[in-house]
Image 1 (tube, one colour):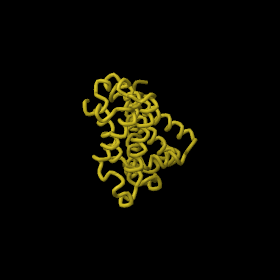
Image 2 (tube, one colour):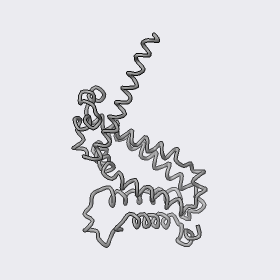
Image 3 (cartoon, helix red, strand yellow):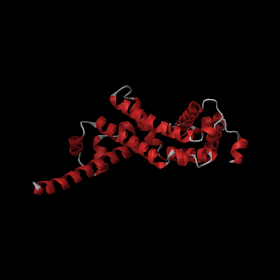
Image 4 (spheres, rainbow, N blue to C red):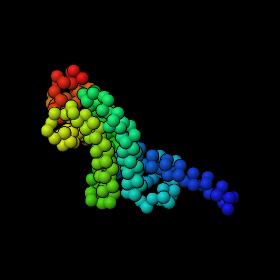
Length: 223
């Protein structure tokens, strides 16, 4: 029995490592080539595996991409959970916290725009499936964690319904980032209408967020 375990453990480790590489490759290919271009042969090549090795683990391309996307959303939720607790967030002045959080969102959305676009297309294309439900639960869990971080500053929020205000303001920020950064747009059509660089975009999103939840510019300046 001990000999069997010694033989099995390296095999299991190799299998887990191959699956990790495969899921990483699936996410990278999805971001580089979109849903249509994320084929099994291309993902297998990117991972240094054969298509046969992929099919031994996953029934088809959809199952592979579903697993990869759920993994991305789970890691995102984990990072939000361990990154900053509400008690710690409460120690940072609300205007400063808002500036830091939205600034990091702008950077992240810009860096991962193609992947986020492809993920949204894939998820929406499977609306009301079990996969769609799982993805929606993970996204909402992360969203609620961020809302709770802002609500650690409830005393500073002057809106009569703080939770609703933070939730709606955060939704406006996310929707704007998708429209301006993630979904490809012809920038020339919006010249003079939209911010022309990410620094201004971040500043305006912070201004919108704080004004909506009832933090005036005077309060922000004092903080």
